Image (cartoon, rainbow, N blue to C red):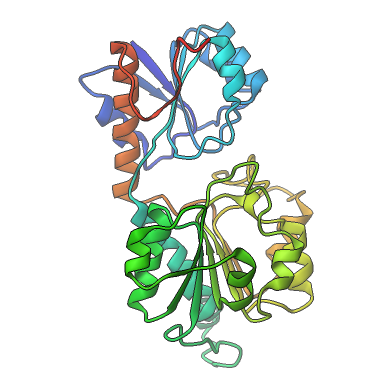
Length: 333
């Protein structure tokens, strides 16, 4: 059997092909799964999608009509999938429930230190042989307060890094993580966390309850010189409200690896096109903002684990087995 994989990056292709070797053939496409590209999957029983795929109702119906019966998404998040429609169609939907939390946590910390110490601005200057220090002053993080919003596996890994730096630890989540408590974390309501934290990092999934969790009120509650980092999902932040606060001169630094309207932009080369997203274009103009293209997960270790889990999902489906990765089993009423 041949599996069709959408949204495969150049670095991933040899890894995916090697992982499926000896099991099934795999056809890797760079294009992402969207309403326009879904017809390509006609005749493929099993499709693998990437994190920015459009798996809304219309795409799922197109895939089903073409013969697709199983979709294995190469990500932990699944807010892009209409699970109700998938269940009604009898599709099996699987994801990757776990991969290295250190990949995202370490990248989030990298964003925080980069905006704090003005690394990008410094690098751009020195490339032009401008070695002045004016405007590059950062702050020691030791002794300051970090607010970790979401203390699951990634949030815990981020907390361990902050603990190693000697920071005061505040956390917010629906359940307390014993490992974070052992590190000295104090759980508080999110309003207190926003008000007291010098560095705020977001590590919650995107759900209806967390959509635009960081809204205008939350942003106004934060310190004027706070550092804000988001390596989870773009929809956690009201970006237009963030731009408003940045225009008012607030925040010492903002590091964003995700953006709420990133679909159709991130993972693609848009360098020769006019960017029509005015909000993103405005974000790019602020010297204290660093935007990266959803790469926090992108390490050899994490991608390898994601691909291995994807292969297992496919083999489990074909063998009639279920695992914790299955979101919608084929026999769902």
